[in-house]
Each structure stands twice: as C-alpha cells, then as structure tokens.
Image (cartoon, rainbow, N blue to C red; front, top):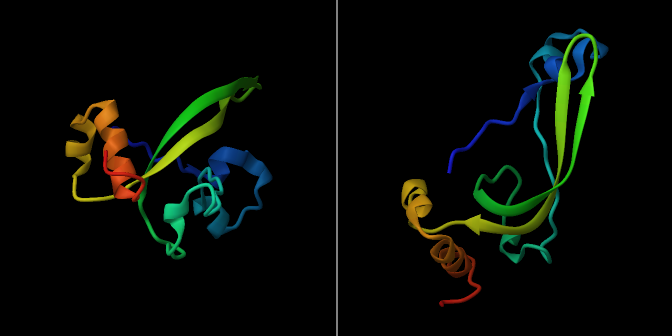
Amino acid sequence: MKKYDVGIKEKEMYGETVPSTSSSKERIIRPSFSLTQKQLPILKGKEFDDHFTIEADVRIEAIRSTEDEKNSKVTYEIEILKVGLKSGKLSDDEFDKLSKGDKEKYMKKSVGLGND
C-alpha cells in the first residue's frame, strides 16, 4: 500500500490570513479523527505519541470544489466504516501481498478478535 504524507504547511492551507510569525510558516496541518476504546478496543494501553499503522475501509460522502482567482481546491468528505490496527510480525510488503480475506484474518488475529 502506498502511503502519502497528507500534511500541508499552514501558510499553504490558509494563505496570508495566518499571522506572519516564524512558527506559523513552518507549522504542518494534518487531518485527524477520534476513536473511543469502545469503537477500537485495541487502543487500550496506547500512550500519547505512540505510532502505529491502521487500515481503514472508507466511503466518500461528498466532494466539494472551490475556485478563486488564485487557485482551485477539491475537498473530500470521508466516512470511516471500519478500522483495523496493523500489528504483528509481517512487514508492510508481506502484508500488502496478502489477499483481502487473508489481510482481514491477519488483522483480527493481531488484535485478538479470532483465530480463523
């Protein structure tokens, strides 16, 4: 699976409306979302600033286009349907080579949801 850095410099995102300070020029804005332990029980025990890989099934809910004299922008509203935490001993390359069914089985086993 190809991964993309979705961070955008604050100045690029908001233009000249951001106060001109040295820190605001370099601040990176990234999309985020929140989950509860009830939604994803495997999060229990995770700490602030832990890094891990998730895989998500999503659906595009809306596509919005805006255009002005300087640029155009397309924004996608994404609904998150299912999320899995990728963990275990497979490398990213090995995981990517698995069939969709095998990926689901591997992720369920990794998070303790079954052995099938």
